[in-house]
Length: 114
Length: 110
Image: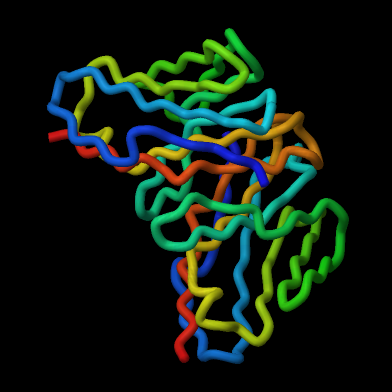
């Protein structure tokens, strides 16, 4: 089965601080995604990547940067964290799109910004 | 931006009962649809996909798709307490991007 891991699993940050969330996948999938999950909003796409070196903006990219240094790793960076970024963040990986585009999710990172 | 209307927000069914979940999508480019399930404390996991009009049955789960109205539904027969979870529909208007509904919290009471 596909394997996506995230670190840290829990993070408490201060307003204005820098936060980096990391994701690793061992599925050799080209595509990787970062979502946030908030009650009432479901899963909202922040950034995604088609492969090493590429990042694309999703629906809610403001306040977030992404980095894809390799096929396996995809990071989400909050340069200046704000309390509104308190949420649960999920990373996912997936093969090429269309009918083969099932996404495999990691266990999530709970971020609290005080 | 794809809009996804998912209903109901929450649903309580007795053990052995039928649960029905619904979604409507706004983007007519959507061709592929999924249902995902998320148990508490875990990441979402794909439950089943549906790409053609009509019904698709996998065990106790039946998905229905009407492409003309961009409507998908999920029916869970003989619901079990282990089915209690958050369920999301998802559609693909872009070759590589999924848009998710806001979720239905299903509780199956013993």
